Image (cartoon, rainbow over all chains, first blue to last red; front, side, top):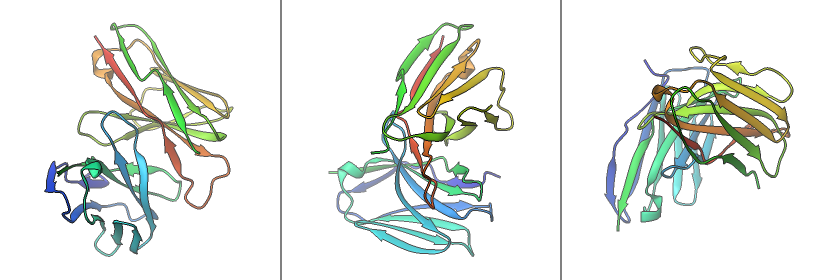
Length: 110
Length: 118
């Protein structure tokens, strides 16, 4: 079993839709949970991170972690074509090692 | 700030040759750099962690004699793929961690290097 599981998609939505991206994880040692955005042929960039369980909001983005069910979510409100990218979730353990999901490809249609 | 560059961005080589990829932190000092490999539609897989001035730590299953890592300064790490074969074709991404750290010890990623071995 992979430590971080993520549906690869692709996920296609119309502009303005609310997008829900999800991951599950198995490693109880994860302390931080991250969401990265990766454009084609580019390196990932950190979008948001949360520590332990709870919600965190930043503009149109909300990250959510439920440690009891080992579930990580990213919500994007009022999605824009410029949000089209691959979104990677990751867990970080106590040694600051990142374990990535396989990424979900998102396409926001104008 | 926190910019990481990689060179080259793309390289095509013949089977059996060696390829060197450079990773530089442009505006900060990085005591630790990481090398990842990403196959199409798969996640980034950590290959090794390199600390400035010391030997790299390789993940299980990664051949240290094939993937040579040198972290000679606080702003430069190199990955050399020796005797490359077609199965080494992949997207290689480095990341660097600012020596000042912070609670997250955030890694800043380079743009990646696409290696194609013919």
